[in-house]
Image 1 (cartoon, one colour):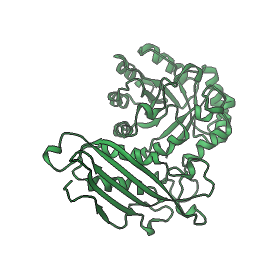
Image 2 (cartoon, rainbow, N blue to C red; image 1 turned 45 degrees about the vertical axis):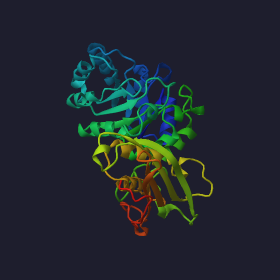
Image 3 (cartoon, one colour; image 1 turned 180 degrees about the vertical axis):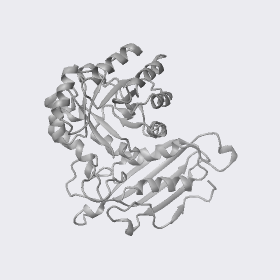
Image 4 (cartoon, rainbow, N blue to C red; image 1 turned 135 degrees about the vertical axis):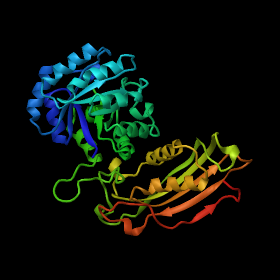
Length: 394
């Protein structure tokens, strides 16, 4: 389950976040940057006020990579009864020593290392965190004026961080000026939590106060664990509509078409030897038919974002060499059909550098009707029609 981490400044904001459905209350001083710390007395008051209704975390502040300073601050915060302590790690020769110095606290509190996407994050520290008993690692942004997380850590690079952290049994967090449209793009990576501040505030200004309606808007986009009987697991492919499944759709509202056209990326593709070890430009055109869930769409719950299609293409391309255009098209189609609201998809893949024109393949795939059932794990199926654009071998 991906949890909603809400960054707050004190007791009053913590209560608003709780009412809005936050899973983790995170204490920080947003006026002092990504890791601005609040006073230990304030942390203690919030821990007392929350009274176990959800975990509480706190950041250590903007500390130098000095083991004595970092351990001293962690020990002071630990005395407040906090559940998680977040420690920022900037590129520094002493970062390893700081991580190892914190091992003494690992059995008493959950330590979370924070790396910064806009400060050349060192993912080679992940095994050091694991060896030192850290609970998790997250990526944030240090300079909130210079873009969101995905501006610095693009979608095709997020899986590398997530998989490396998970390989060391570390919980995974993603944060960094995240907005509502980022949620359906990040949920497929299955982070353990997504962190928010600005998106929860009035006017999306992170130094403004927490707004209950803003918290609720973000909460509705992150599927919550269902209580009661049955499995608690959420299929993250039911993204963008808080765990939407076709059974919940009500009357048939028909379909819309969303599309990505003339999307060109350098791709390692081709069966010939001269095509190995080099990139060539490939154009993607994708059209998806999407079941409507409302006749009055208002926010990201009600749509399938074209960003998800482009993110998927980038991630597939980043995996490495693909022999055939057909194989690449199939992977893109499967990615798009992994959202059960998509009933049909057409994918065209064109190689642009093998001659005066383009060559490639166009395929059409559709959702299997029997897959539309609540709680069913979906595996794309359907007709296997292929329409070639050229007789040239890809």
